[in-house]
Structure formats: C-alpha cells, structure tokens
Amino acid sequence: MTDLLELQKKFISKHLFAGGIAADYTMGNGHDTLFLSRTVGPRGRVYAFDVQSAALQSTARRLAAENAPQNYILIHDSHHNAGDYIKQKVNAGMFNLGWLPGSDRTVFTRRETTLPAISAAIERMSADGILLVAVYPGHSEGDAEGRLIQEYLSTLDRRKYMNALFRITNSPSSPYFFIIEN
Ligand SMILES: C[S@@+](CC[C@H](N)C(=O)[O-])C[C@H]1O[C@@H](n2cnc3c(N)ncnc32)[C@H](O)[C@@H]1O
Image (cartoon, rainbow, N blue to C red):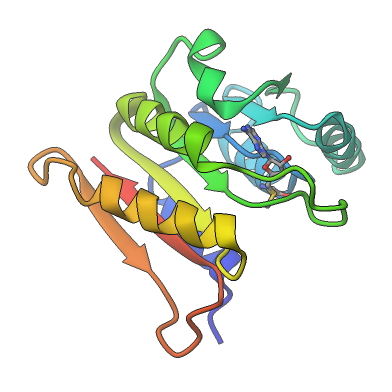
C-alpha cells in the first residue's frame, strides 16, 4: 500500500536536484532534513527550523550518524521567521505539522504561526518549486489547522499555482498533505 511519507518524497524529487535549495520548516527528528540534505548534496543548502531544542539535538545526531553532507543549517526559531534566515528562492519546502514524535506533545504547530509561515514559504518558492504541507488530524488544533490551510490555499491564483490535496478518503483521520507547485 502507498506510504504517505514516501509519496511526499516522490513529489519533491521531481523538483529538487543536486545543488538545490531546500527548507524543512518543521525539523522534528530530522528525517525530512536528512532526505533534503542528501537530495541537494554537498553543493546544495538546507535550512531547517524548529522551536524545540530537543528537535535540533535529535536532528544533529541523525545527520551526523548518517554522514549527511555538510549543507544544512539547523535554526532554533519558528518557521514564521524563516525570512530572517533565508535570503534566496527555495526549490522545495516541507511542513510536517503537529508535535515532535516521542515528546510530551505540549509543543505543536499552531494556526497563528503556521498560516503566515506557509504564505511566506509560497512567496519564497523558486520557479518550478514545490511546497508540501502534511497535516495530522484527529486532535482539535490539527483539525482546525488543516481546515484553515485548505481555505487559504483555495484562494491562490490558479494561473500562478497548482494546489492539490492528497487524502485517504476511506481513512479520514489519517495524515494528509497539500502539494503546492508553481
Ligand atoms: C511532526 S514534527 C516534524 C517531523 C519532522 N519533519 C521529521 O522528519 O522528523 C513537527 C515539529 O514541528 C515543530 N514546531 C512546532 N511549532 C513550530 C514552529 N512555529 N516553527 C517550527 N517548528 C515548529 C515541533 O517542535 C515538532 O518538532
């Protein structure tokens, strides 16, 4: 059966190449950062953000253990401040919303900062860029976050962006993701 995380990577792989610029807007335990780092290789660059120092530590450990290319910057700040750090266009960006797996779940992404961060990430996309936003429903913030993101993305100018939603219709509480391409 289709693995949603693998599917996200397939979409990204059509837009991100060696030497490219990528952003992991929710670093967590660094699985996505590692994938992006390997995809862009030593000549590329990956900006990764998280508000929890535990996430930066976990990601740094993973990247070192996996011998990831030295092409990443781990930033201890909210993704809605990404513009303070990223001064170039981004070929591929990823948001995997929710909480840090293995944590006490007291820190999680919130609409107030998620929406401005997504809006700015869309502005930051390069030509032929891609942004993926994965939503984890089944808790009140995740449900509300997903609804608001969908409402916002539905307003994007179709002549500039294609926004699609990948959702398992016979499992509505499973994670789902938006794909934004320009
Ligand atoms: C589901 S996890 C991400 C999983 C991660 N991409 C991976 O590969 O392991 C969500 C992460 O978003 C982080 N987060 C919550 N609010 C944030 C914010 N405003 N800016 C950046 N990261 C945030 C959480 O601390 C958590 O680590």
